[in-house]
Image 1: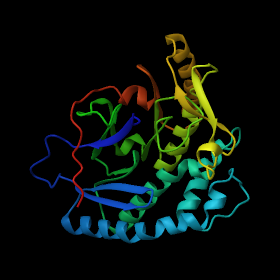
Image 2: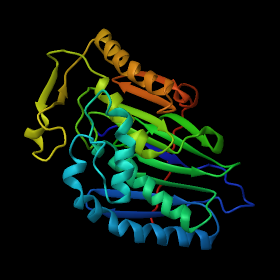
Image 3: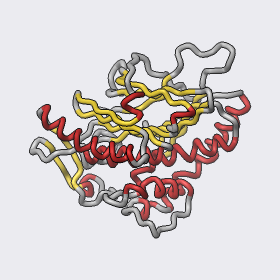
Length: 307
């Protein structure tokens, strides 16, 4: 089973007076896989995509050069040398006060933020996004919007969108991220998916990880294994990560979601995130902007044709 994930949706009725069809670019290097969408004039699109290609070529080597510190618990005294590593550390800093977290909790979102930043520095774009495996950095000018859809089963023959969020310049949303036990990284909790809305993708990424870790209960139906046994290089070390979840009662699911919602609501109150959407089995919970924005359903996903 693949995890729930967020996708950018295409406006089914683009304005014929404007060039509303996005241009897509697919960039892949090792574990980093980006789908980039840009709107705007042809020249601006080309400049933005060229800037993305040039910056992307250097990111993985930079991360590897600081990997030991990035995989360690956040240390406020450590001075990271590269831009993405600094983004990662800044994003996890607020969460390190009461829980273990390493900068790796924000890596996917920080990479997306960095690529979006260099694109916007190279060209004027009314709308743009960088989707790094479901962790998405977004940009919208005044009067513009993007629509994000959450898909519960991306591996289904016809993926169905469970809910949508409209992002405009006044929303304050610059990033969307999803975490859970089915994702690319290990989870301490049992959430199928936690999607967060934040000011940027890096902080949304870190927050999704922390909330997903809290969606949990003690139960013999939950299998756990030390992270190090599954991956000797895991930043979680000997911490127990969830490997399987057998059938849970409705009451157990509700209690686990209550735990996650407590964390999500705290993060919304302190404005670290703008909203969160939690999923476990068939149960859903939302708070903050997500409770108002993640409400509509649509049957069609955007077709991402990469250049």
